[in-house]
Image 1 (spheres, helix red, strand yellow):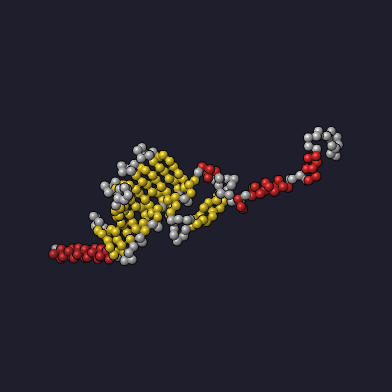
Image 2 (cartoon, one colour):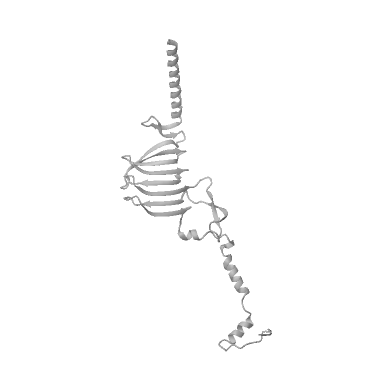
Length: 242
């Protein structure tokens, strides 16, 4: 019985020692940090001075705008994943998503009473590979993709997707916008696919060439000008019979 008690005591001490060792090792990776209310490590700055892990930032009131608190994860000093904003009273103000430190995907904003204000859609640009592919559609069939071209994306994050604006009192949608790689799309854009012809003007060129090839000879033009306004007379055309 005594042996079992001593064995259990030693096991508990060993587990406690491992827990402390892991905790010290975790803290040792942070140059500065704070301990949260639940005992977790927050606001860690690594040995290179970069923010890592979960952070809570308190933003003071500025130029008439009320202060707020935001929380989320840093990866090598850049925001990553979902971040949330709260009033200093704890009311949810925003849910944002980040990649490479820039907004990416769906971002939602709310009033202090929880009513939706705005919903945004973003596309973060990879700083190491700022390129993307764009579908090219057939001129005669806007639903048919004929090619994909590579384009360079300018900027750090682009408006991309559906944006919705809400009435703060009733929560109903008042306006919807569609963006494609930071360009606002209109109804006419859907009806005018990308022109994939060389120079984008082949049709006009072919029309012009056909008109030139069907131009009347100079002698015919002079004859028509000379006899303009005169009564037309029948001429023999070499045909026989009636």
